[in-house]
Amino acid sequence: MAEPLELKKTLNLPKTDFPMKASLPQNEPKQLAAWEESHLYQRILEARQASPYLFSMTARRIPRERFIWAPG
Image 1 (cartoon, rainbow, N blue to C red):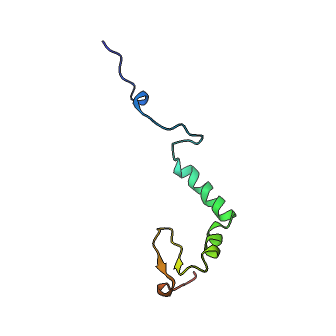
Image 2 (cartoon, rainbow, N blue to C red):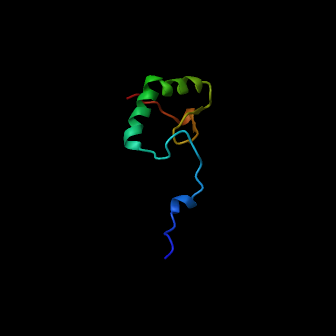
């Protein structure tokens, strides 16, 4: 009888220095804390101040004249 084929050996995956598994429940809070600590969002807003479009996490371009800012 032939040996079973190991599917892992048939995959052509890149070799990386970081884990391929996302582990979002553990890693996302760490990433959010790092962004908060570095004031990343505020720095993005400051860098885009002169732009006619607002920065959007969804990559939508929102013209400033159509945007109503309601700080909450």
